Image (tube, rainbow, N blue to C red; front, side):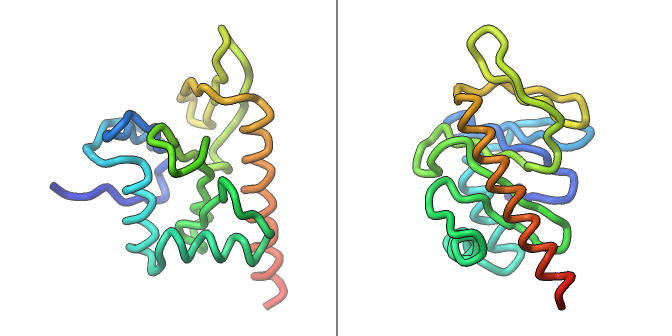
Length: 148
C-alpha cells in the first residue's frame, strides 16, 4: 500500500482510529494509516523526523506540548494537533487553511477556506490556542527568512 504524504493541497488529517480522512483542497478520502503515521512519514519525506520537528518548534517558540509541526518550510506546511499526539483521536489541521471555527450543537465546527467543515470534540479555547501557536511559529519562520 502506498503511504499518503502531506502536500500543498492537504488541509487536514481527520483521525478515525487506525484510519484517516484526508481533506485536500478539492477532495477528501480515507486512507489506512493513522494521522500520526502520516505526519511522521511526511516529516521524514521532507528530511526530518516528527521528533526533530518538535524540537525545532520548541527552539523557535518555546512550546513543548501539543506542538505545531513544520512539515515542510518553503511551502508553509504547518499543522497543529487537536489533542496530544499520543491520543489515537488526534487530528492535524493546517492553520493557514482555516477560515472560521465556532460551536454548533455542542461540537466545534472548523470551516476551511475551501468550504469543507469538520466537527471536533475540543473546546474553543483549545483550538484558539493551537491556531495562535501555529501562527506564531509561521511568523517567527517568516521573520527569520526576511532577516537572511
